[in-house]
Length: 484
Image 1 (cartoon, helix red, strand yellow):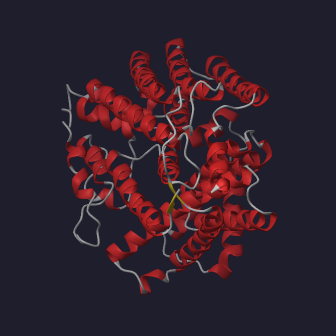
Image 2 (image 1 turned 180 degrees about the vertical axis):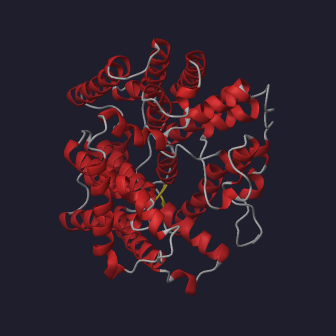
Image 3 (image 1 turned 60 degrees about the horizontal axis):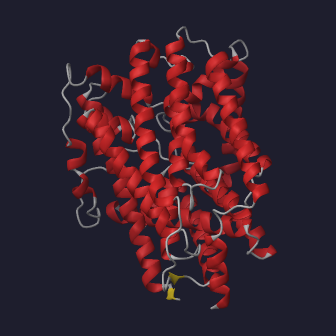
């Protein structure tokens, strides 16, 4: 009992960083902010200062929640700050890196879009900050896992996740799982993996794990990311790394630069050759299944395509090389499309992508004919003429929450989204401020933290994933947790 209370008090004191630690975080923050502002103002090739100003406006609004958290003015897990940061590379930077679709719009359109995004982030920040500027009263009891049981359980989850990845990429799962059962199992494992990565990385940061468990966790985490990346979908491995990194930083209360740099180099290198690998093994005549003993040759081929890509880019400028990532992650060109076409040329959707949310909450195992979780995204693309219904079966063009809200209700939709997200992220953060890391409150908060990185999800994907993962946590709460 005393150990549990000690863990609870330690977690509750996380937002109140020591003066030196707070100064270090603020130093990193100001260096990042200064570097971004200098880049957006002087190192870009934009022909209009209005566009540069719009990019800086979005960046400033996206950085404000992080400043409040780093300075200690905002408490709890940094869900909204991390969510706001994603708008730097999805909305701000594509404006000043000559995104091929963003540059087709006028500087006036850029400014109007930038102002809309900045107001959205500012309103969300104000609402979120109201919930996290002071700690809530300590509750009388918690439902939580014991420390020993939690360590073993989450290490076992990573082992199961690794075997799931191996079986999935090897084509074995289809022998045992079909349709809705496969979807349910995959959702459960993904949700558990997010929780395991965060909890164990946090405990690694606070040095609560023994040396043997720490080594085992790092081995399992790296193995999971490797086996997940075999599918040629780097977003899963990258999201897991981001969640684990954030958890470690919160636990250790300092930023470890070297692992972050190494991971970024590895992900960037593999990202460069990903298109060639997909063209050969996804859309070509060669089989896409990869067995575990084929992993070395698989990554050698992948590295070869990445190396060839960089060799072909030798005659291109540095800005052109950086643009490939920003083109892939950009969402602002879709936001500009919606603002340019609606409501004059193309009417608003008036909530059609939100009306399907109740259907997505029904598990596919109970409804084999359930609509796809990306149905809201497909409705957007069809409505704006980007895809046909047939094309949606092979390609997904993600819009993100903000562009979706504008396509449905215009500026009113953006305002409503700011209120909903600011309230939701603020309440879930406040709920977990005084809670131990293995409590019900913290595990639910970890899910929201993980989903904050998903920049291309529509509301339907977000709600479906959250509902599926919540079922997993409810199972943990009922069967594994005790009341303290």
